Image (cartoon, rainbow, N blue to C red; front, side, top):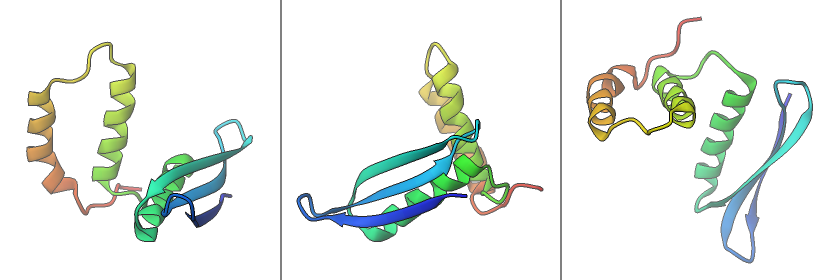
Length: 103
């Protein structure tokens, strides 16, 4: 189970998120992310992060696609071409935008 905290940094005037989660080995970890201009943006980041870390199956297919794309980009020696990114965005993103993954 994860816990969270969204606060405003008085020095910077931006919001930050601090949350605890359990990684894949079961160890408790702390994650801090700073620089959100609005509380709503911080909450959206937090929800996406916790869904990713907890592996919930109710994320949208578009979010799953973006997650896979990031993972593949880390593993590839060369980044995917701009043409293939543009093609996948134009063809698949409108289709996947609001759909949930099958469970």
